Length: 137
Image (cartoon, rainbow, N blue to C red; front, side, top):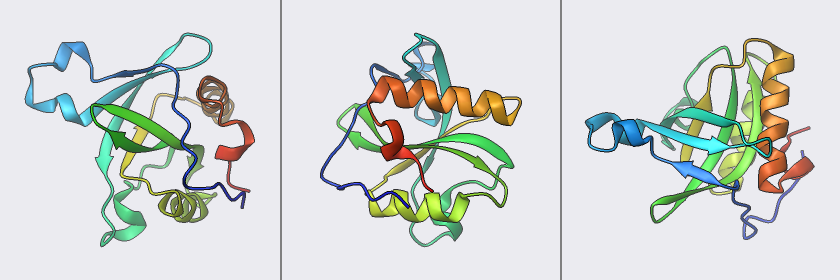
């Protein structure tokens, strides 16, 4: 596992934020948009961190891109970007994100294959400056 100083926070640039289409809707806090280095926008479902739940509240989806985030006022700051597939690095990624002080799980489900998910994660890492720091070995 790569250890990251939890005091160091890298922001995905730019984090677009809440979806404008849901600005006045009760669902607005359930989604967040991030931009990759390519300029592509990635919409993620937002789930709260829950220390008492299995995997700290990270949903049991089969395959997705995970952005472990913390809140900074209205902004969201990425601490870690991972590709999660059932039985892969899930538990190590959760442990590392907890160590990094994660407050929210942002889950992007639209990568149709492992290669697509890896490309999305790489795009988000490149935008954030996280590089290899965000990867769990």
